[in-house]
Image (tube, rainbow, N blue to C red; front, side, top):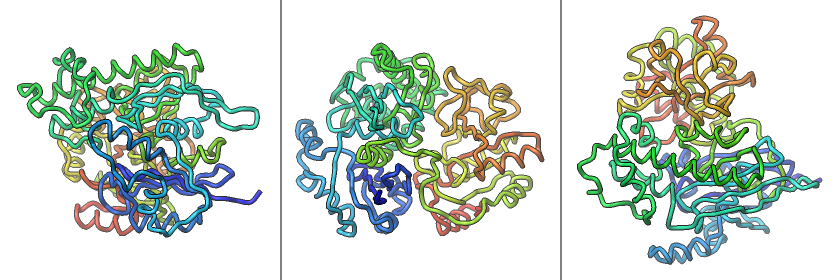
Length: 486
C-alpha cells in the first residue's frame, strides 16, 4: 500500500490547528496556529505552521466543517454572509497561501468532525458519542451511535441533536463575557471562579440559558451580583444541562462507553459526574475545534487512529532534562521545562510545563505571580498514577486522569496547599508507566522527597500561548526570571 498523508484543518474562526496522519492511522503531527503566531486562539494559519505541515507533502486535505452551511446559519442569525468563506477551497487558499496543493479536498459536518476526533482515537469499538459546544454549522449538541463495521470502517448514526440558537456553550461564554473575561477563551477562569461563590441566581440563569446568547448578554444583567456568584450560578446550570444531555444519551442504550467531545467537554468540574451515566469514558485531550483538525483527517481515513499520546507538536530534540529539573525543584522549588514534542490541546502535560513543589505554603502565590494570573486560580497536580487513590478521591468511572480532565477531592489538602482549590478539589493529571520524561522525573522526585506529585501548569503567562520552541523558552526565561530546562 502506497503511504499517503492526510492533512486535517480547523481554521478561519478561532483556535486554528492542523493535523497530519498517514493512511496507516499514525498521527505524524498535530499543532495549534497560536503556538507559531504567538496570538492566543489565533483563527488563522501563519507561515511557521504552514512550513511545518508542508514538510509532510499531504495528498489529501480534509476541512472540519461545511462552509456554505455555516454561512446559511450566519445569515439567519443576522451576522451576514462572508463571501470569501463560502467554499472550502476559498478558505484553504487563504489559510495555506497556495503552498500546499492537493487534488483531493474534503469537508465534513462540524459536529461529525468532533465525534470522529473522539471515537476514532478512543479504545472502543462501539460507543455513544456526545458533542456539546457553542455552535457548529447549526448544531449545538449532538448524540451519535458510533461503531466499526466488519471492514474496520467507522460508522456514525446521529441519534439526536439540538440546533441553534439554544446552546450550553453560548450560555457559558455569555456569562464569561458578563463577568469581564474573554468569551471563547477564558471559560476555564469562570469555572475556577465558581468555587468562590454561591449559586444564588440559578433560577434566573435557567431562564437565560433558553435565550439566544450568540452576541452575549446585557452588561447590566444582574448588575448587583458579585462575579463569583454569577460564575457559581452559571456552573450549576451548565452542569444541570450537561447531565440532562447525558441522561438522554444513556437512554438510547446504544453503548455504556461514552466518548465526549466539543469545547464544553473541557469543563472538568462537570466531568466528575459523568460516571453516573456511563461505565467507561474517553475525552480526547483536545476536544474543542482545534481537535477537529484530527477529526476531519480521521473521517477522510475512515478507520481507527493509532492514538499513543498528546505529544504531537513541534519537537525540541534531546533527552528530557530530569537531573536539571530535579536540582532546580530542590533548590528553587519552581522550574520550567520545554523538551520533546509540544502537547496537542490546551493542557500542558509535562513537555511545556511550569513545575513546582506542591507542598510549600507560598508556592501557589509565587507561580500565579510569575504567570500574571489572578490569585484565586487553582493549579493542577501531576502524580504517579499508582499513587492517585492514596492522595485523591477519584470520581466514579475514572480510574485515571491522564489529560487533566476531571477534578477529585484531595485527601490531605493542608499538606499540599499549592494544588488544592478553595473547594478542596484538584484538577488531576495521572502519569502511567509510559516511558515519558515527566514519568521519569516524578519517579526520581518521589525517591528523593517521598512525594509522588508536582504542581504542573502551562509554560506561559495569562493571555499568551504556551511556549512552543527553544526560542520561546529563552524569551520566557529572560522575561520572567524562571529557569527553563530543555
